Amino acid sequence: MSRRTTPQEDFIRGIWKENPVLVQLLGLCPTLAVTGTVDNALTMGIATFFVLLGSSVLVATFKSVIPKEVRISAYILVIATFVTIADNVLHAVVPEIHKSLGPFVPLIVVNCIILGRQEAFASKNTVGRATLDAIGTGFGFIITMMIMGSMRELLGNGTWLGYPLFGAHFEPWVIMVLPPGGFFTLGFILLGIAWWKGRTAVPVRPRRWPHGVTTEVGGSTS
Amino acid sequence: MSEQKLPVIETESGGAQPPPVQVEASSVRLISTLAVAGALAGMAIVMVFQWAKPRIDKHNAEVLAAAVTDVLGGAQRYETVFLDGDHFTTEPQSDTAGLDRVYVGYDANGQPRGVAMEAGEPGFQDVIDLLFGFDPATGDVIGMKVLNSNETPGLGAKITYDSTFIGEFNGVGTPLQGVKKDRAKGGHDEVVMITGATISSRAVIKIINDRLDAIEQPVDSYWSTLAPAAATSAAAKSGGSVTNAASGGGL
Image: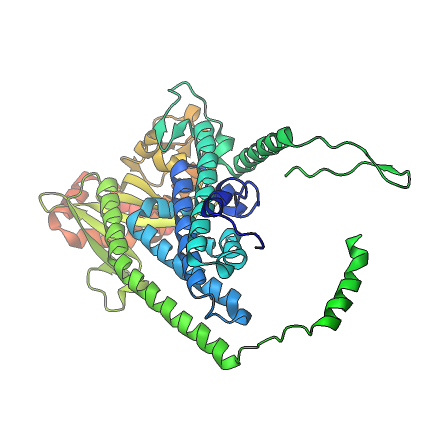
């Protein structure tokens, strides 16, 4: 909070450098649970985006009115309201997808990404910056959900958004649409990111301390 | 290194300037803030709910109508009949909310086509809810559609979309017998189960048999009052219907 960030940084941060799922490892429950198909993943991403944006704007607007003692309760109230609205709208507009998402739409209430952004950012910054931050983080979440959903649906079902891509001879890897497939996919993506970051990091050399003790300094990869 | 310095900094700052005074909000303010926020949230939710409710109800009704038409092999319209005590009636005395119900489908000529009923029991992972059509005149199941299930994708979930398996329920004698693919003898009451989804297939068969066991007698007696034409055709087609009902009730 010490250094002012530019609007671009506010926006981009949530997508890449501080991607909520891939870097902060938050919101893993929906990431693992509802990314079996692309349409489920996309709907979940959009619902979370909507809740995050609405909550951030409201919390940033009313941050001076909310006493700090009840701020978490107030955030939860705001988030729960938006989640209930999203749940009802999904039920009315896309009933089939709403059915397949099951309890995970109401569970957005306890998604750490949303409460985390309220406490860490929206409650301390202007409405404009909170909005940009929410849009960036929301997009970061949607993108991750889409990557997960695409990989799992393609390999596990041979389709993308319901369209068959591999022809009749493709034997689906059923495990990819089952819960273990979620763990495998997320694990490989995180592995890829760790490799990408390690690739650009400066190699750590042994360092000589003044008292003649040689020690290996643990390197930070960020 | 910084850990060693930390206490020094604390004493320094503590000596130089007093800690900032914590302004505590009064309880009234806390309660009123949350109360106002809660009231506004409630209002917003009620408004959205009022907008969404008719759409959700309309969709549910459409899904049910489509499913009833589906399992009754092209019924034109259907009528909800409630089980009041031990008999079916269109106008029950008690509140309809808690009553068991079936849907009687009629064809284009206004002739009763069959009875569709919902049933649900645990499958492999979770309760399977399904709707099936039953023709009391012949004692056959004439169609089946899974409404809600949470079976294993790619395996048990096939009960909802495997057209061969669903087709097995198109005119099959009751009580149903589940058989494996290579053991099928072509009997009238045989349902060939899905390879790799035996438990889910068996669950579907059991759900239909149990439901019929429990409800076939009142359904048959309502059917006979429904349309004399249908009743006579039922009697003419087979005495099997009557014996079937009796054995079903006795089980």
